[in-house]
Length: 95
Length: 443
View 1 (cartoon, rainbow over the protein chains, first blue to last red):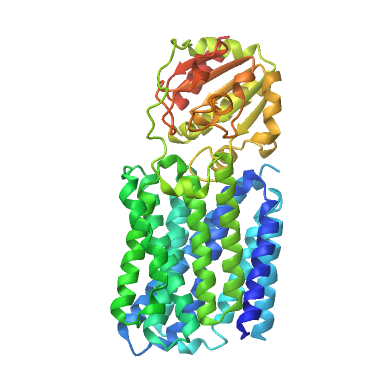
View 2 (cartoon, each protein chain N blue to C red):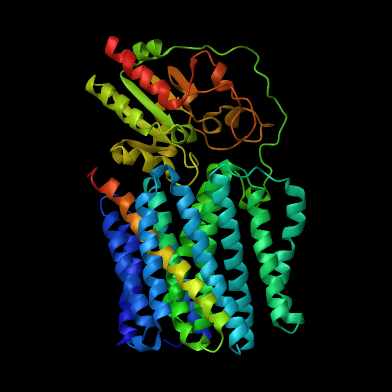
């Protein structure tokens, strides 16, 4: 997906705005799972690592750094969602 | 095709946040977010999986398994540390990617700033989060904040370096070093009870780092998801600050609680016994329990649940009053109570419950201190003046379970403890509750 810089800025603004509106409505009871869930989402930087990995084939050092980034981001995503699921399960059974 | 997958992914992320608004639908929100993430990651391969070698796939599989393993083993009381740790990983990943982009490709001039920004924020988040984890584990004491405040001025300045200097590897590595050091020093000066703000703030930064990485690699979904995380973290940060009547800058400055004012009690508190507490509770019609960090430290959740059951069996109304900054991360107390099956309908926020205290028979304060200090309402010279507190002193009887008279995080005396309607049970929260429950069987 390519876009001009201005359009990208507009999308950034809209996403922040939607995020702000929706998250403001989340009750205090769910703030910890919200945090661990949004934390997992921040691991989406894995995409950037996947995109640049084929580009760094010439340099072994850079390749290792990207692999470290991949490892960190994957841990962040998988661990984050898994623990969020565990927390939310505790709220579900109260229903 | 890829565009459509990405569109679905972005919509699912936003929809997931919407579902997060209610406890009954929140577990579905997590599934939606997972699906959105899977689609986004899948799309990054652009249907060409052969471009990647075995080292790549092995790294993903091992890290994924490790993530599952850690998340299954961690205890609910350790949740702040875990979120902090994962936060650091996310930030570190974005920072590393920005570094690789800076040293590998010939970026357009605009992207230099974005990449350096992403690298600085990512590295700061990484080292800051690791320090936060150590603080939460009690492995690190507070630094003096004066040196740190002078040093931190450098960080915004180095982001502007590419405007004046040719970028080479030495400059980039220097910037990384400054960012990492600033993260360490900045978080090291902030005290333990301010960790809810720090964790939320670092969470926001990890989103912003991801978002700016999205600008470098031209990925809209990365920008959208990063922005959502950034917004979520900022909201929680500001909520936590408002709940303490302090500004973010004031919290980040550190050194809170190094005060020497007004630490003397004019009289001795009234000490009580588990038997007396049990008798008092059994004559009550309404009870409000105020959990604090002391409950988490003592692992007293199960005892809280047992006492709640005992009281409810006697037709006594039991509610929980939870201050926004109780514990070490936003919503920490709620999760600990949910873990022992306490209904979230019984957990109330400060705004919802404060008018109930004056008509409540007994309030039980479990290891909370500053958030129930009436000086926040009355003493203009107090460092916590103006902070919204739970008005427990208005109840007919207050029982505080606490190990000693030692001051809380703000470092000030709490006149609640010597109020005429207050009694102290000097013990650990878990032991105290268990003894009260035992006494109940004899009443």
